[in-house]
Image (tube, rainbow, N blue to C red; front, side, top):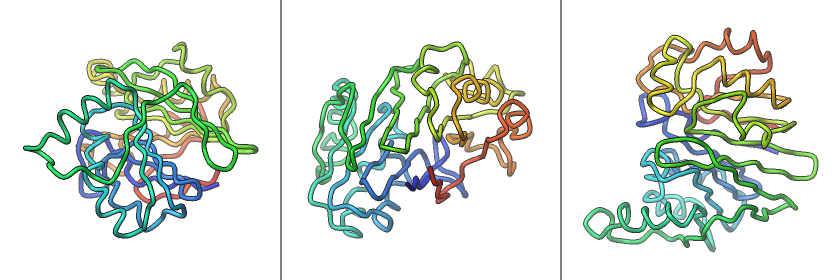
Length: 246
């Protein structure tokens, strides 16, 4: 099973990365809708698309306004946007306000249930995360394949969400900062390298891919991979258009 990282930074795009957007092409599942959404049309393999939003901050939802480009590149019979009712209402009122984006994109809003059935016999389960304004984490399970997506939270190996990740083949977890900026992570509701790796180790996952990195950081390694790998060796840094098999 393939996961394509369409966008891997947070807050705003930079010259190398777009904001949060992940795609599982064979089942038409998208996780978050950041500025990389426009890339989805070239990879989709299904006649429908389900977009699951962790929360409604702009770097995770602005790509909903790019859906016209997606459906031009790949014909879609229906696009469903799943989020909590509160987040959908905020998107409807503000992002799609007539003065901001007057023509509604081709999509239907669906309140996010605790568990959602996916194509191929899969299911998505949501769980709450601590973040200013609130966020959701996702676990996705198919026969023989599993992954979890955790973004916009401050990683903590003792947090309640860690058990929700237990034993997944792939954990995609935000890592906005290196350890040297742990204070910024706490202040902004984001994560740094050591606790992210500790979460992966404690949850017994098979593989960790770090995303949602700081867009201002100019280093090739903006998070401190050596630090993370010393705790959890099977750690990688995600980058735009990376395909991850799980």
